[in-house]
Length: 291
Image 1 (cartoon, rainbow, N blue to C red):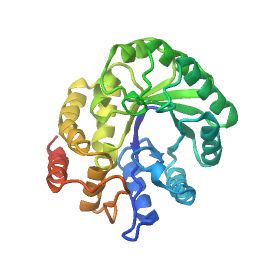
Image 2 (cartoon, rainbow, N blue to C red):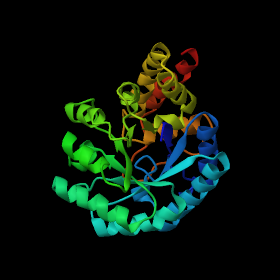
Image 3 (cartoon, rainbow, N blue to C red):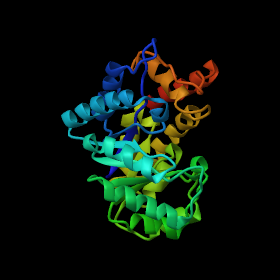
C-alpha cells in the first residue's frame, strides 16, 4: 500500500442529493494525477451523514473509477459498537479492496477490547482491514505496544495513523517494523512519517493537490530528500488552511472554486467556511505551481 490515497469528499447537488458526476470527476482527477488509491466513505466523505442508499451510490461510483484505473479502493466502515461495525463492514466489503475501520470511539474500551473488536470484524469479512487510529477524535489513545499488537492481527493489513504528532508511540510502532502498511492520516505529517518508514498516506488535501502529494511520496521513495522536503514545505500552508475550519468545508469550497465539484455544500451540523479561510487555502494551492 505504498503511495498517497486520496480521501474523497462526497459532493452534493444544490438540492442536497449525492452528486455522482462530480464524485466521478474528482476520483478520476485524483487517480489521473498520481494518487495510488481512493478512500471513500471516510470522515472527509461525511459518511456518518449519508443514508445507506447514498453510501451505496458513492461506493458504486468509486469502485467503477478504481477498476478503470487499476487502483485500490479503501472504504470506511465502523461505529462504536462491534456488532454494528460488522454489519456495516459486510455491506461495504463486496465493493472494497480494504476496509478502513475506526478504533471504537466515545466508549473508550480497554486495549484488549480494541484488539478483540478488530479480530471480530476481520473474521466477519473477506477483505483486509486498515485500522484507523485517530485518538483526538475517538478519545481512545493506543500505546505503541498495542499498535504493534493490532498490526500483528492477520486480518489487519495496515493502519491509518493520525496521532497529531510524531510521538513516542508512533516511533515505537514504526521501529517494530511489523511488515504491515503504516499510512499517515495527518496531511501535514506525511513527509516526516514517510522518512521514518511509513508506507504512504491518506490525505484529504490530495483531492485538491494529488500531483504534489504523489511527487512528494515518490521523492522520498527514490531517496531525493531535498525534493521531498521542498514539496512538504510548499504543501504545509495548504494543509494548515484546509483544516483551519472543520473538514471538509474548506476543501469542498476550494474544489468547487476550481471546478472539480459543482457545489461546495456540506451537511449539518457542518457549516460553510468563512470566505477568508477559503481564500487563504486557494492562495496556498496556487503557489504550489512554483514548488
